[in-house]
Amino acid sequence: MSSPTEPSRTPDFLNHDRPPVPDLVVPRGVQQFHLRDKPVRGRLVRLGALADALLTRHDNHPAVTALAGQALALTAGLAAALKFRGSFSLQAKGDGPVPMLLADCTDGGALRGYARADADRLAALVADGATPSAADLLGKGYLAFTCDQGPDMDRYQGLVAIEGDSLTDMTGTYFRTSEQLATHVHLACAKTDAGWRAAALILERVAGAGGLGQAMDAEAQEEAWRTAVALAATLTDAEMLDDALPGDRLLHRLFALEGLALDRARALSYGCRCSRARLAGVLAGFGPEDLDHMAEEGTITMTCEFCNLGFRFDRAEIRGAVQG
Image (spheres, rainbow, N blue to C red):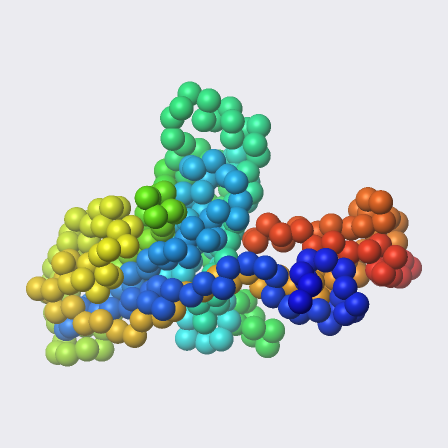
């Protein structure tokens, strides 16, 4: 089979072949859990080799790659709470050296994302050798959390100003102000001996005992939540990113004495959904003059920002939109 990134005899609008990207699945990428008879539920996200496959599609500065990895792990964890067919996305737009950060994950666990960086501004930021924070990279702007329930349902979107030094801080601001939900979030991403790894631990406080077991009075609920957060705070980045430490064992280290109950695990996969047909549809919306301007020696190249693959189209084969 020829590469779908290259022109072929198949009409572009019919060519839905998957581009040459990793066919990778992490069977237990998201481990959901709750604490019996306590108002605590959570999700442990560990991308494993999927993190390296997603993050190395772009040759970014390590600080930018780490931020993108944290966004991927966070998005995967939040998408695991979806009760419908659709997707969940996180988008940050700011005026810093990384003006765009995007990650999205479907209800089936197909995960993708990228960070767009201004090379010159980033070089100036890291010139002294210091590791920039998420706030340094993103600057001032907003963070958007979007639930897309498909074409027949309205999208739900929550917006919050970028506040705090880390993506964890920014996420906490969103949950406090938009969702009014008590949460504890720990994000980690680093390059290990096995490649890039990313992980997230998300705890949420639910009403009462989460519908499980006997009712608790308000004071007991508060104490149970404080205890769970204190235990979660002992978790290190090294533990979260250690491939040799299974997720269930990690959770038992934290919460075995608090009534840990493991729920259904969810798979995560390499989830770029680009195709020649999709990009051909985008090109068809441009007018002839715009298409002529895009063409170089009779060829238009469109690069998918997620998988960083260039799709080549013959200008002569693209009619474009009729300009009225």
